[in-house]
Structures are given as structure tokens and as C-alpha cells.
Amino acid sequence: MNFVLDPKEFRLLDGLRMNPRKSFSGRVRGERLTRKKGVSIEFADYREYSEGDDLRHLDWNVLARLDVPVMRTYQDEEDLAVHLLLDVSPSMSFGEPTKSELARKCALGLGYVALMGGDTVYPRTLSRVTPRTLPLRGRASFPKLAAWSQASSDTSDSFSKSLRAFANSSARTGVVALISDGLDPEATTAIRILAGRGHEILFLQVLSSVDLDPDLEGDLRLVDAEGGAPVEVTANGSVIREYRKRLAAHNAALVDAILRVGGRHHLITSSWELSSVVNDVWKRGGWIR
Image (tube, rainbow, N blue to C red; front, side, top):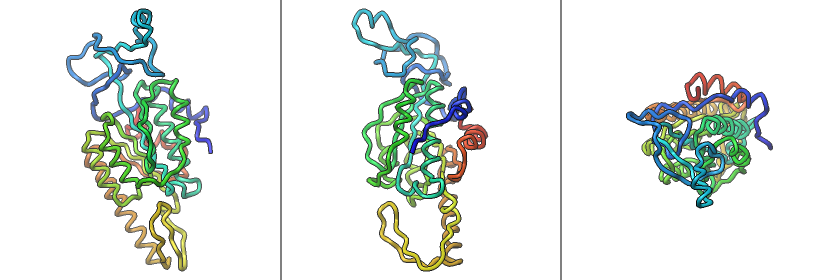
């Protein structure tokens, strides 16, 4: 399935920028004014050229002399590291439409905002083993981001284990945009560990109508899509009520953990359109501006 954005969605996202609450140290020249005191527009350092960099800051003298493309960096503006963490585990394939469809499109939309705002995007899929992600910068990197958004599902690791692995990696400190159903029972612990590394967390929780209100009845054999042992249950009114109670408690604990570390959270259903997410969640909640 193709998760590319349509022209109306591109127009909706154009001109928007990420709006972090925290200030992070940038590594390359960007388009975001730093909040640090005492900075200037003076030359700071050189770094290697990366595809998508603004050619206005390429040092043409060095290129002509050494035939090596290098970028000049300055002290007045900094880029923001935006880590897109997308849950591609099998549980995301439930619902109609599936949770995965909206999650991937939201990741692509938020990544587009970051790239167009001059920030550096690090896309990463959770619940699978992935090589170190190369940074993406600028409009020219969007096709690579779009290709990444088509990543297939994998059950190699649990959501919480993958999140811990990211938290313990050498990833730059920045904004972590986490898009998942968040149904892993260890999710709150992993969130606390992630925040402890200094990241600012934006958690877009995507659930399906089946997750929220399962229409089940009778004797059932439930199979865990992510490798757990099957469970025999009798679905009746009391069982469904207990399920809803536990789901509400789990989500409340998840929200509390995120808010306590200064993050932001919003729960949506898989039937939402991207335009509603942009206007009713990202803009209204101050995730972007």
C-alpha cells in the first residue's frame, strides 16, 4: 500500500514548523533560532556535506581547492534533531482502516514538516532490527523518507524493548515523535527511560475502534499477533467491561508518564484523516506552528 501524501496534504503542511518546548544543541546550521544567550552570526566550524544540505552554505573555495564538499556552520541558528519512531509491529495492522495506514501517513507528514523547517530527521522503525539511520535534511531527502514509510512489519523485538534500545543508543538528543498504539504493558517504563536521556516526547497513540470497543461474543481463542501464547476466553458483558477498564487504566498511566516528563500525548483512532490530526492535534496542541 502507498502512503504518499496527496497535493492537498502537502499544501496543508507547507509553511509549518516543529515547535519544541525544550532547547537542544544543534550540530549543523539550520533555520531555527537558538534560545542560547550570547550567540552571533559568526562562523563556527566546518562539517562534511550531506545530501539535502542548503548549498548556500557550501564553502566553494574549499571545493575548488581540494575537490571536497564541506559546509560552513554558524553560531546564530541551529538544527533540531527530530526522531521519527514508527511502530510497525503486527498489532498495528488491526482495524479498518488499519492503525498502520494512519500511523505511517502521520510519520510522513510530521517528517515533511521537519525537513521543510530546516531540521534534521532521523526515521526509525520500532519492533524490528534496523541499521543506524542516516540523517535526512532538506526537501531533497523527502523521497527517502517516503520510501522509509513503506517499511514492512517485523516481530523481532517488542515495542518497549525497541524503545529502550533507542534510548540507550548514541542518538542525538532532540524531539522524539513516537507513533504507536502503545499497547505494550511495559510502555510507561520505556517512556520514562527515554525521557531520562533528555528527549522531548510527542506521543501520537493510534487505536482502532476494535481496540476501544471490541465486538466479541462467545467462547474465543485469542492469538497474540506478536508471539504470545494463545488464550481461551469467554467473551461476555463482564469480560468486555473488565477489558475496557484495564485499557483505560493502561492509557491513563501512559498519559501520566508522558506528561510528568514534559511530553505531549494525544489519542486518535485509525479512522481519522491526516488533516484532522494536523489541525486538531498538532496545531491545537502546539506540536507544530
